[in-house]
Structure formats: C-alpha cells, structure tokens
Length: 141
Image 1: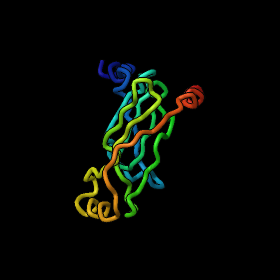
Image 2: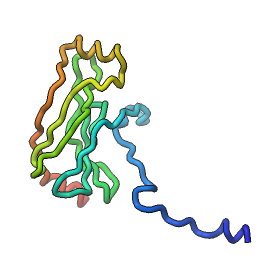
Image 3: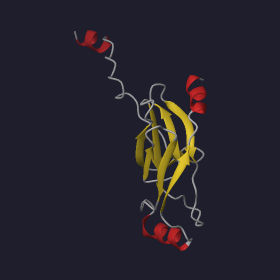
C-alpha cells in the first residue's frame, strides 16, 4: 500500500500557488535581486499587473500567461550611479496614465541615501502617458 501511495499522481496546486514572479533582477545571472515596492493592476484588464521596485524600474506582467508584457519605466540614477527606487505606482481610472513616485527606499542604507542626496536627487512624483495598444500585440504573441 505504501508503494501505491507513492506512485499516485500529485494533485495540481491551485492557480497561483505553484508560481512565483522572478522580477526586478539584474546582472549576468540575474543574481542581483531588488525588492518590489509597489503593485498596481491595470484597470481595463485585471490580469495585467504592474510592479515597481528598488531597481527604479516598472514592469507590466500578464498573470494569465505568466510573463513580462511591457517595460514601462527604465531605471534612472541620481548621479551616484545607484538607481532611484519607485516606492509607489498607480494607474489612472482609464489606464492611459501611470503615476509614480521616485524616492530613496533605504534599501542601500544610510550611505546610499547620502550619496543619492549628495548627487542632487530630490524625491518627486511624475506622470507617464501610456499607449496600451502595443501591449495587445505583446499579449497575443
């Protein structure tokens, strides 16, 4: 009976329990891992999720297909070479704009904060105008 139990097929995990996003990674082997500081679902298509991280980048993920659909924001640096984190993001109701904050998130500690501040970076909130029509092509392909 023990052999029969070992040979029985494993029950499939509920959707979402068998998958983890490996996002906000950089380096040759993707060995540098940055924290995710904010999430926002795209209002017209709730299976599209934007993530923003301490790497200063914002990506759009297709949760149904489990892959990156768009790279919404590339990292900006504060003159010190360190990326400026994106601790907050939000889509407009119509999905044609993305508000985001750029700020130090203390992931690099006090020394990184002082270097960023010394390079002249000021925390700010910005608006990115979006064109979701291109995402459709990426979703389908």
